[in-house]
Length: 162
Ligand SMILES: [Zn+2]
Image 1 (cartoon, protein in one colour):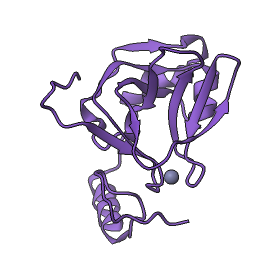
Image 2 (cartoon, protein in one colour):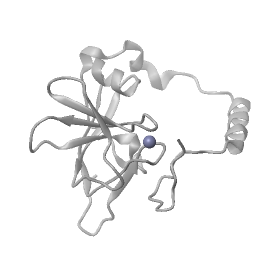
Image 3 (tube, rainbow, N blue to C red):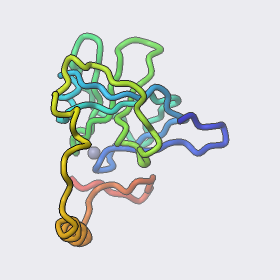
């Protein structure tokens, strides 16, 4: 997904909205199965995309150096994992793909860290889904939930919950 000069900037942020970003475009997108990415995301792999022209529009994330080469940015209010940052100059910051307000167009083109892959992730698409009745109940339940999550667009009036 490469934005043309007239394209709007891509935006995103953490779940609570304390940290927001925008960038001109994204480059290389991948998923990383390594054990450090699993731990940093609390998940089976980390979907990441290189951000071009990144700007933190509210405040910067807190960072944890997970090794002597990489720092991980996250929101210290809500815990959302946000970045993978090589230490050193001229390296792009990689952003967590689902932290973008619209992650649908940021498609990973490579898998890395496969030595850490959990074997069952090979069969994720084969897992059964809910029954039609279960889906109906789930949708009805979610319709009643009051979300405290930042909306998927910039909102200058937004106040994060603590
Ligand atoms: Zn947050």
